[in-house]
Structure formats: C-alpha cells, structure tokens
Length: 342
Ligand SMILES: Cc1cc2nc3c(=O)[nH]c(=O)nc-3n(C[C@H](O)[C@H](O)[C@H](O)COP(=O)(O)OP(=O)(O)OC[C@H]3O[C@@H](n4cnc5c(N)ncnc54)[C@H](O)[C@@H]3O)c2cc1C
Image: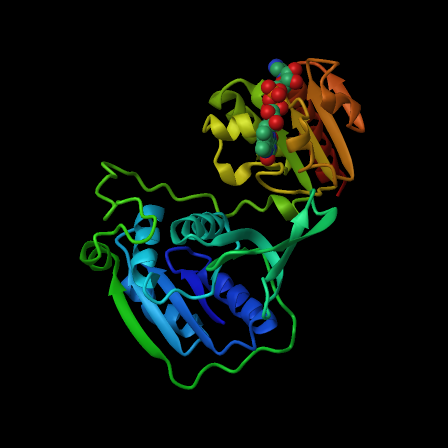
C-alpha cells in the first residue's frame, strides 16, 4: 500500500495540518513504508518551513500562483496519474474536504471526508467518522482506489508512536503551470481546465480567522430576521458591547452579510456556550444542532410559533432591535454600577 499526504502550504494553518496528517499516518498507516508528501505552495519564503514540516522521505512541491482548487486539482491529477498512490490524505478543513472529494472523482476513486480512524489491510479499507451530530460513529468501507480521505477537523493523534523524521529527504519541485500545460491538463476524467485563465478577476479578502465560536462562552446569533447587512452590524455592535461572540444562521452567511466562518449549524460551527442568544432565527434543525449543547438558550423572535421558541430556555416575543438595545443598556448599566462599587 502506498500513500501521499497532501499539505496545503497556501493556508496559514499548514503547521497544524502537517501535525495532524503526520499523526494520522503514524497512527494508521505506520506499516506502509512508501509514503510521500505533496505540498501545494505559493510563497517562496515558506518553502523551507513547509519541507521541514513534512515527515516523509519523498517530498514533492507544487508551486501555484495562488490557491485555486481547479489549478491544484489538475496539477495533482497530472502529477499522480502515472503512479497513482493507494491513499491520499487531505487536511481536515473545508479546502481539504473539497480537494479529497473532487480528486477522488477525477481519479475514479472513492472518498470520505472528516474521518478519524482507518483500518487498512488486505481487503477494503474501513474508515470511521462522526455521524448525526456526533451522536453516532459511522463505519464506511471504501471500494475503489485511490482512497481520498480528509481528516476530521482538529484531528490529533496521541499514539506515542510518532516516527523520527527521515534523516534525508528527497525534494522534487514542480510548477503547476508547467505540469498542467505539458499534460494538456485533462488527465483521467479531467475537466480540460489547463490553468486558471478562466478566472477573469479576483479580489483577495483576508478572512476572519479569529472567530472561535466553538470555544466561546457567550454567543449572540443572528438570523434572517435581522433583514440586511446593516441589521447585522447593529447586532455586531451590541455583541462587542456585551462581550459576546457573533454567530449567524445560513441565510445571513449566504447573503454575505457575514463571512462563512461565522456560520453555526451542521454546515458550520457546533458550539456549546454557557449562553446563546438568538435574534431573528427560526430554529431550523440544521441550525439548532449547532447550539443545542448550550447551557442556556434565549430566543428573540416576533413569531410565537417559531420552532426556536419551543426549544429555548427563555423566549422573548418581540422585534429583536429594541430587545437588544435594552439588553445592551442594562449590561452597560450593570458594568457601570459594578465599577463604582469597586
Ligand atoms: C443540508 C442543509 C444544511 C444546512 N445547514 C445549515 C446550517 O449549518 N446552519 C443554518 O443556520 N442553516 C442551515 N441550513 C438551512 C436551515 O434549514 C434553515 O433554512 C436556516 O437555518 C434558516 O435560517 P433563519 O432562522 O435565519 O431564517 P428563517 O427560517 O427565515 O427565520 C427567520 C426568523 O426571523 C424571525 N423574524 C423576522 N423578523 C424579525 C424581527 N424583526 N425580530 C425578531 N425576529 C424576527 C421570523 O419570525 C423567523 O422565525 C441547512 C439546510 C440544509 C438543507
């Protein structure tokens, strides 16, 4: 059995990715000697630290102008189609899951995202991942090579089996443009997209990587009921004043009133704060799954029949705006009195 760990060096989180991929390899693929690391990168200065973060004898770097899934996938496909590995392991973030699923489709293999264990022997490999909001563990048997897997978000293996770094590494560097133009970019089941010239224009927006909804103790979550971007800005202002982390429901993220990194629910963060206040959120199951572990849920909604009203500890049937204004006023007043008492 052969494997490749695919590290996304364009992402700021590559040191954690490298640790997780190596930990997974040491825990579940330790018996397979023929591993390599494929590193996607776009900044020359990062190259050496990316190589240092790798833990396989063979390291293949692919330089891209910028991270663009089509370009990366076509380059990976062109690199691998002649000597395809049995396993491809991708990091446990959104980009890693996207690449694992799309790469499997291009290579005619099978994929599974968010796995935390693997049994790879003579027969079909068996992977495990969480299902039904972490209430169940699901076991999947994969039937077609290559097996393209992405790790569970935040995966860390504490096996104590960490292998020493290989004393000598063989490093090969490729350029995505050359890889993709030499091989016409079509590969196996390819899309025929030779480079990223189909991107006519783009703007780079730094994402808010400070969001830490999963460990937040106090969340103020806003839904479609806030109506528009300026409604959300008011919620953000209140949250900053009262010390809450802002989270949003899907319509808010889909309307781009807030970044996707703020999304709560099955497609976003699964939170468990001490207090979660929802404003203008109906409480659909896909959202509620992301807050149900809260110690206390307080809902503000104009509709007494909204599902969130039944599933919250405290409900206020009113327009969210005056309620949040009053809440902010009370908390500020309280803080002022506490300050005077000291
Ligand atoms: C596969 C799948 C995955 C999904 N994943 C997610 C997910 O991860 N997260 C997620 O959020 N959704 C997810 N959804 C969508 C989900 O099903 C709901 O559509 C979504 O959560 C609804 O968001 P909402 O409550 O903001 O909007 P709505 O359901 O439209 O509710 C808006 C609420 O605001 C109230 N309201 C209106 N005006 C005011 C006001 N002035 N003051 C107070 N209240 C007001 C209304 O009474 C209403 O209850 C998913 C759906 C699918 C199919």
